[in-house]
Image (cartoon, rainbow, N blue to C red; front, side, top):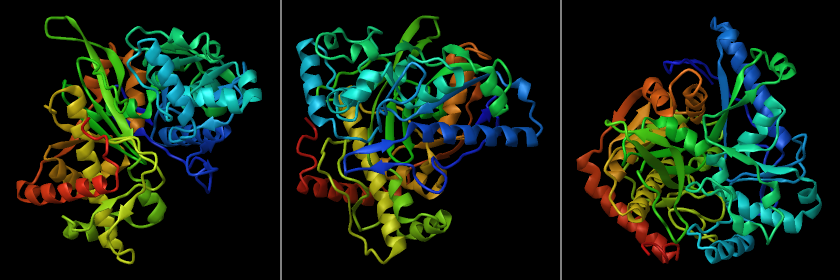
Length: 483
């Protein structure tokens, strides 16, 4: 995506990760790997595509100032000094490092750290790789995340990451340092990258790479963020208490807060944004407590690939509220709003009735969103005070947006551009053409439409949500919910 300093999208281009296929290998129901060379191939094709579109629209290549990249949170790969992969790339939803996560959590607790490590975290996967892929681990110069991998290909430099991606690798955002409790127990500590704040200028695109990708010589490369953090920046949420839900393949939740709440259960973790100056000029901390569910829009890709989604929306709309309950989890295991590795999805609607099952699953995602914000309310110690700012591909559906407003009882706002890539553009502009992140957000964001809850449907959805919650309790998924 190419965006102007005023927030106008000048060009946008997307490609499949691997031409003709998803590019993901699932060895088991918990092992999710990708080939990092596929990331670079897709990034290269996307960049060439967006540059061609930009020029077709009369854009001037030399006017481009900076580039930033976002990528999936918790995805990690070991690379050598040249940036080549030495280990498998374990994805955000890879759950094989369960035992390692428990062990790391114990180490952290002994060191008085209050953040439990989960199997979805990069740090747990690093320990798994050290024990199960020792040859690749030993060859690795450092561990890098998805966004870092692409940035290193552009700049030719290896060994740095942003604080947003570093969080799930164990980085302490309060102390702004890697934990010292790793030092004597594992070789990971010596393979952790340098950390900078998102929006920091880190270098320039190599000349040969710029020529290959038709980018301007000297284009600045700016530290990016996780896809969830980038989506928050693109959402329009700016007041403490505002929430952001990113509905893509999964659901990612972020709440803007003035402190980082502590959640002993480890369900909720907190990213950190640059401090924000109040009306008196005093710098105030800004945090993003949140989490991600394995539920989202993946069921659409799995069950309705190639279908006319607008037509399905139209067919589903008169069927809402739906008496059929659904928890549209595609794979096995859930991480938020409850942690249940054995969780499986369900849908009561007749499988041969596409519109009925589509409506039930749309509603099921909205129920997960409502449950998630109840957990955030409990962890942060206060009910949500602001509105919900919606990003991700799912927010493009007016039917789904209205349904989510009705189910949650909250107003949902959709920004003019709801893609995570827009958040990366804001980061690219933050310290190059604007005066920091908050200035860039204020100048580049526009709300396109708002969806207000329909009070006439609220009682019906309350009853259905109660039945949905009871069903999850019967399944044993909410055994620890509310504690």
